Image 1: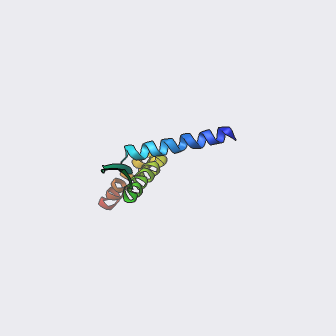
Image 2: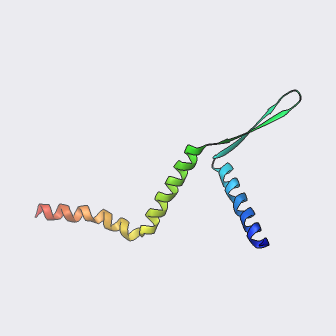
Image 3: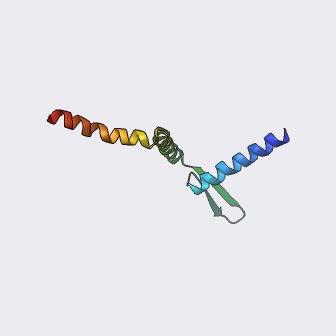
Length: 84
């Protein structure tokens, strides 16, 4: 149970650190006369955009280089068939 808790804390720390690095989260401090206000902003659109880009990259890499070569050669083969 202790190992699971440590793993969850490490995962949470990584997500929070990555979020600040990728500008998903930002902190703003406002110093008043008798108080300090801390504001946390979460950019949901940036998170969705970055996750969408990551999914596309994973799909491209999962297809491998072979699928890219096939995609590039298919129109050339079709063009040759039409010319003959």
